[in-house]
Every structure is written in C-alpha cells, then in structure tokens.
Image: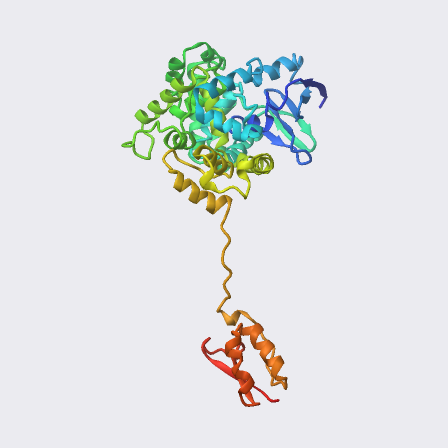
Length: 455
C-alpha cells in the first residue's frame, strides 16, 4: 500500500475555527482526538485521512492518501475551506445574531472561549444521511461507534495510520445489498439496521448516487419533502441532512436540546403544549428561530446546541471560574466589604450569573440579595459544640490526685463554668466530685460517671 502525504497551514485563529466544537459537537462522527495532544484531531473526509492540529493562530494539517484510490488529491486548502464553510465571515454572523438576540449575546460574552469559532460543516450527503439514521434515540458516543462500525464492515480500506485502520464511507450500492441488515443487527444497530438497508434500496431503485447532491439546488421545502420519503427519515433527521450537507442553512433540527432551549430560554413553546413534540409545535419552534436569527438560523442554532452539550460544560465551568477570579480582582462591587443592599439590581444579577446561578426575569431585589448572601458572601455561622459524645473516642479514664487550683482550671477549661459558681469550691470538702460524661459508655448521653479527686 502506497501512502503519500501533504502538509499545510490554514491561517484561521481559534476564534474563526474551533476544531473541537465543530468536529466533536454532533455534526460528524468520524473524528477522534489524539491520545497525546487534545488539540489534534484525525478523521476521514471522503477518500483521504486528515490530521488537523489547532493552535491559537492557525490550523496545521497533514493529509494522507492512498495512490491506488486517490490519483489526484486536489487542492487541500480549498477542500477544507468548503468543509468548514470558511468563506463565510464568522465575525459578521456572530455580531448579527448578537444584535438580534440578547440570549445569544449573553452566552457568547460568558463562554466565548468555548462557543466562538463554531461552524456548520458541509458534509458528504451520503455519509450525512446514513449517519443520522443512526442518530434516532441515541447519543453522540454511540452514534460514533455505529458509524465507524458501518465503515469498517462495508467501506473500502484507505490505509493504516498509527496502528489504526481508516475506511471510506460505504457506497449506497453496498448498503443496499441483502446481507447488510443482518450484519448491522449483529453489530447492535437494532431497528436502525432495517432503515439503513431500506433507505439504500430506495435511493438505488429510484435515483443515482448524484441525486442527493442535486438536492443542494432545490429549495428548503422541496428538499425536506424529498428526504422524508426515504425510509427511516423523519422531519428532524431531514433537517439535519439539509443543514449539514445540502446547503440549507435555515434548517432547524428540533430535538430535546432545542425544545428545552425554546421552552426555557425563549418561551417559544406555548404553555398548553405537551412535553412531547408534535408536528405543529416542531414547526412553530423552527419558524420562531428562523424569524429571530434570519437565513442562517440553523448555524446559530448549532452554536446554542453545542452550548448545551455535556462534553463542553466542563470547559464552560472552567472559563467561569477564571472569569470570576478576574472579576474579583478588578471589580470593587464584588468586594467582600460591600453590602449587597447597596448594589444596584443589575450588578447583583451580573455577580450571580457569573457564579453560574440561573436567574429568571421576575426576581425582586430582596430575592437577589438572599441569593447573594447564600452563594456569593455567606454569613458567618455561629459555632456550636456538638452534643454527640459518642463521636469522641477516649482510651481510658482513671482517678488522679490533683490540687484544688488545678481542679478549678480543668473545670473552667472543660465546662466553662462561671467564676461565681467556682467560689463554692473554696469552702467545699477536700474530697470533691466532678461530674463528666462517661464517653466510653454505651448508655444514653445523659448517664454520667463520677470522678473523685483527693487532696
């Protein structure tokens, strides 16, 4: 097997292209993070193996290709620009969405290090379609396993790199064959195995492989109507395919993440709507976001979708902690010397949100002050001595001969008795009795043991 490789650099900062968010955010399922470098990603685009490494100012790439499969590798820079939509000015898009949407603006201001640089991928339609048939009732980790199993068993081997085999995505012809469903079921695809095979048979019997690419020229509505005729593809999957491979950047795939976003942050879901997603509610949510964000609504939704993914929440929390430390240094209003009642309500809200506390729009100033005192500046608690004597372990207790003054000192230290009471000890008999808890006894706390001191 003959491998050739090409190296190069794309001059795009992390703010223009965030590789982790784009490649691990639920769009493509064929990219893996290097074990030795969290900024390096390896995956397959069509018939070539790409290794991309992120730095703050640029993207370094190395492309391996098999000469027996790929005679002419083409212009790699242009291929990557198409794959990541790099011809679109991301700064202009973010500014436009931030002006239209205060929620979007707030998220970018809070978590810009994680959410900047997110781009919609322009995937191969065949790979995109069959990958998202696997996405039904599934999570990103399991979809990734399924897609790569499908490639290993039905795709053509490109080659081995660093002890890992890389495959092309299977053709529609191969996925339409009779043995596919049984093999996929053995690979734990479940009911999706049938839909993958039936979808391939449907496309093969009615169109050629270029038909999916031709849908890029259709309108959004016509494209959706064609896709939902394919077995295993509903409205949400059709929107995913339209957005990520068919140039319909206004498509809004509404899943549970987007439903919660629409319900909790934007109030796009009517109060009378059920928790389950009806066709009417689906359309209402998607249309509301399109009206808010404009013709690139699907791209803006991708940013907000990634904002909600668990994989990126740890990074966001780390950024919040760093931001809080900087804020505490530069902000007088966050000082522990400032009483919360003297702060304006906007400042209280800002401090609480920086702490990661979710706020609604209806909190009064008094409620914000109570949250401030609870989470930002807890009030000192009065120390109380525990009454649970059983928690204290005493090895032994024995009789001791001690002086009267030492007895008084011990008594003051252990039981904090007042001086007036101690005066009685001076006129008491020389054999006195001090009462103290029997710490070794299994009896109730009220039981005592008498210790005698002789003088």
